[in-house]
Image (cartoon, rainbow, N blue to C red):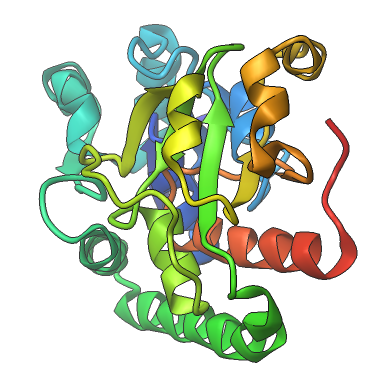
Length: 275
């Protein structure tokens, strides 16, 4: 860590969604909560190697935060309302901004608005617009390539354990991405502000019989073995050829949406990963 005051603007966040957005806006955060887990759940965009780990996201390391404030004259903390309980704790060390990616309303509009707000906070509104433009270019590039696969609805899931899953609905980040790519979502029920609903594995039987089942990593290591012994699972048409994708931050913003476009397209065109 640097000694003495550094007068450059420095940003820190416990929020991975903010972190990935700052990186995409070419203003990488100096410090991030739970760096190791970021590398498991988010993966890309990659954190700079010198990123300081603030520790547990809901209980960041007070000593590291204090040290940061002593090293950087202009320190700014940005995070979503989910971490608002930290505002009072962080306020003595720098400016604190709350940016809501996930709240009531249209999921996609919320993500776009939050991205633009971060661009304004860091003084890079044009970078935010460029990020949006690049995302649209990705959609425009992949949509015609994936058109042959749009005849089947998509179920986007993450396994919690052998009997429970998170399934992502139409009003979710990834749900919006597949819609923009020309796909229909197999799960049309209401979801929470984070875009998902927890379901029992038995509820998969209610999905259309031609559903393409897309599983997003990570998941418990014993899932594949357990499913081979699950009679219901074995009887489901969607179980015959699930599309397994590498990890992507399902509660992310535009960078995660872009990552998902790429891995989803690769999975459909080249084949997914193994269980």
